[in-house]
Length: 148
Image (cartoon, rainbow, N blue to C red; front, side, top):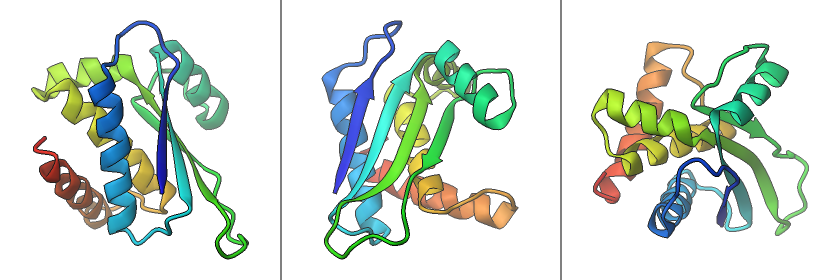
């Protein structure tokens, strides 16, 4: 199981312990969700302008957002083959802004959004109150394990 984090933005310094936190919490969520050892998720940390372009291109919304998930999973994967679930793109500027707004630590907010994106890759949606609550409970379970 691999959650790979790439920090491609230059506006906010991301300490190595935050990168490790994202990898470890993402891996825990994948294990809890019963994903095979061979699965892989990429987490890409970007700035607002980068995520705004993605949001415009793929969702038609000309504004920055906090997290986007791009599902790349192929249902027809050979047994024991690496299964790439997809990419989670997180705006670090939005993380910083929302951490202040919600009174959370930066670590909690970036982990929360990363877990949210991974859940989307696993097929979860939040179109109903019950579905949104289910996603929240799964995220909170992992956050508690890391004391966030």
